[in-house]
Image (cartoon, rainbow, N blue to C red; front, side, top):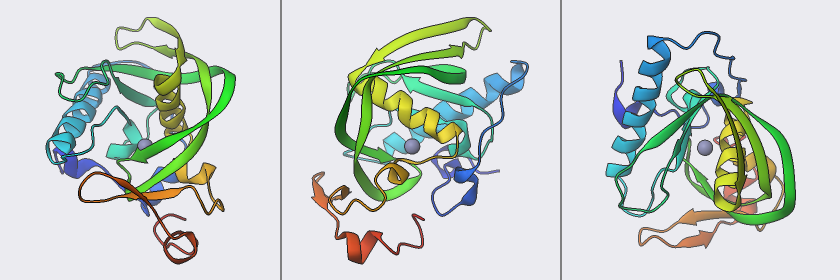
Length: 192
Ligand SMILES: [Zn+2]
């Protein structure tokens, strides 16, 4: 079996388009899955200079279960610690629609300027089986919407499909540069 960052699947892998299954009983397998997810993102981060992983959904390591992990502290360089949310559901979308850049470990090289709600309420279960209710705003709200999308088989590119001005790539020196939609995105065999 693949280990670390090599477990992360990317488009055009069709598994990313499937809906994750609800976790029934939280057991050692669930804990192992969460450990594997954390190991994969830490390993991935170590291989990149300009990017830091803020969250991951289980399907991104090819496990079709409704589990996500979210980094506790988004600051680059601080020791990475993650909180697992089991069966997360967004119970309310609130606030304005805001545009910001998003990338995804499962979509190589493409970034997008994606509209998201500025506030969400989320309900989930912790690894200890306790109910978690959270209100999130700003960047965390965006991250949670992105990850819960993964559990539904949806990816950030789906929100901006057809939008010629919303696709970017990361240059080798860490800058975002607009991608030619007609040439690189529209008929991409990888993205769609
Ligand atoms: Zn993603």
